[in-house]
Figure (cartoon, rainbow, N blue to C red):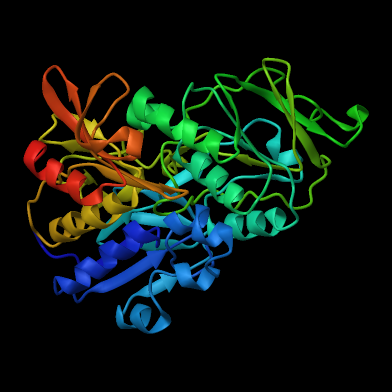
Length: 430
């Protein structure tokens, strides 16, 4: 394989920036360009729902690299310019201003786009949390002391609820699942986390669907009042990861700023209950940010379809949340939404761009911090797996456990037992 003279990375958050840095460490001396929709310098996303939202960090502290290190990368960094279209055969990206960017190789690192509930865009006070601008807007709103309703029982929703309770706010969490993080860690551990939130004062409305929002605007003003625009319940995948890697490329932040649909006053459930709220966070999941790739010639589905080398087409690779790759060890396709994957996958993509032939065979990993609890999982735990405690005691809220399916260990979890979980992973999943 001939080393590409120029490489364009679309998406400059953790996955994209890590790819660029890995290329330079491997000795790549060609032209390197990073294109990103956000105007901010690259920043880390896990702190958004925790330290940044809590006011413990200023936004600058979440920045991935300072200006001097970015300059030392010797790359052209084009910020505030979303990708709008792609021609895989020509390896040409058209940005939102209509300019074409061509390179010998292209890396797609556009991450995720936030899922929304119908009708939420017309209401002030309804937030999502995907990027830094979202976190800053939500933090300012929470400083006013509103009653908060979080919609979504996945990792992001649970982290936001925990942070808001830490700020002393009145918090209600609504979701279709019967426990928090049930899809990620199963009913037993999810039940423990649910009880923890209840003990900390979060009101839980689980197993109920959202049918719409109430607002302070008269019903005659438009369709967004006391119900969603669709008029029916919203069914969506629970958020299965906190903010992780590259941000959406097909739209700016969705915040709770002034709009023309009135101000939110509550959230309605299929039970008929109205949850009063001056602030709402919608955390019902994300989807791969691939809208700009329609008609590109790439295979799209649950992300950008890649082979085991993270290659989507000749000279085209994908990395991070957006990449659906073939895992040779598990004999299945995976798409991983977590910060660790962004960094690890970037090393493989960079090496393969420069002529290596390395399959990407990670042990999946994610973590979440809520209150004084750190949960870490390795492998692929599932709700159907049998859980057995290997060390510690769940009653003391410090333990490590194994997940088994068909007699085979498929996952490891640590609840305030990071070292033990890591050692179990090495023994059971290596």
